[in-house]
Length: 435
Image 1: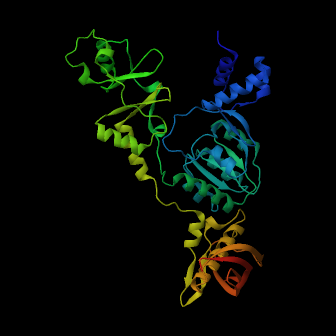
Image 2 (image 1 turned 30 degrees about the vertical axis):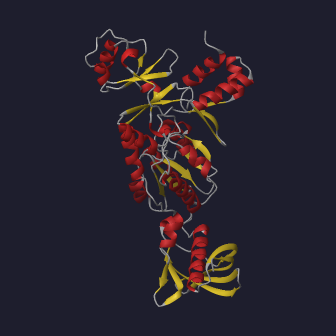
Image 3 (image 1 turned 60 degrees about the horizontal axis):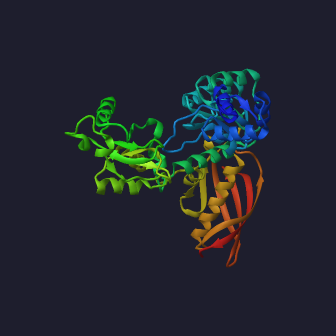
């Protein structure tokens, strides 16, 4: 008879994806203690059956195959932007492929919105509906809500619709940074990232015979199999070379290679690749500290992982990088800069976002100090006065001026013009470094 712990795990596994659970609810429905329910929920989380998300709770999720390289999910987006889920909880663990900023007309917006993407937009109800129908999730900025009809649609399609109090630019920068962090080349790949798990591995027992090897060989394309005992410990490795010319009724333990080379989950990819080349082996058993079989890592696994690592970008580009790249020196004046306001730089009202203006000011000050050979800077305080809003596609002129400088500090004034109109002023206090 199954234990209470196993009964709870089975109950959780039987729930629909997106179903919300709690310790108290499990304890009441299955007549168990809170402690037993808590331990079972934690075990279910370890097995990938549920996930606990801040401000959302513990929900039943679809168990996914382990990926070699982690990708951003909508559940992580909720945590990144301190958001709340308005609907479509069942899709929180779907992968985010790209995000689209909805600072354009609906028709243009939908050209870029596709399945697996995330539309970042303000309180534009029609955009919410069209995005979900197109298979995209929606993140509503500015703390706005949506209609019950949209929430029901999100639930039906298992596509999250979320809300955050941040403006569009800040949200885009947060998500872009998260994607950038995960896209950076992974310095060390471990066996745990690439090996084939036990439930997908073909193996033989030490009590089997050569005839069992031939039977297993006909079922698969492999010729090399680990040999384990009745407790699951690796005791040998058997290949086609070991069984050639041997009677079918010969025990496997008579022909297998005893004490084979094994690796653990924390063995590095580089070490496994070196081992396979120098030892001339195609498959290596992956074991735990007690030599119990966990899976296999093959030469194909290693080659695939090496190719994946090579394709990981060495350098990622953030929103900050995009803004900085767009700031150019005015021809003939090395202390004045110009920049165009693009759609990515606007808030939900279509005007220049505060965060973007702050970045422009900081970048212009840093460039001026480098030009004056004062060194790099770290902003200590920044005071900005907005004179009037800045529309999309405006061409800004940024004029930083050094007011005072000491050995370790600098004070700068910055004027920002849109054409001939002054739109903002700033006072920057900065610490100087590497003078």
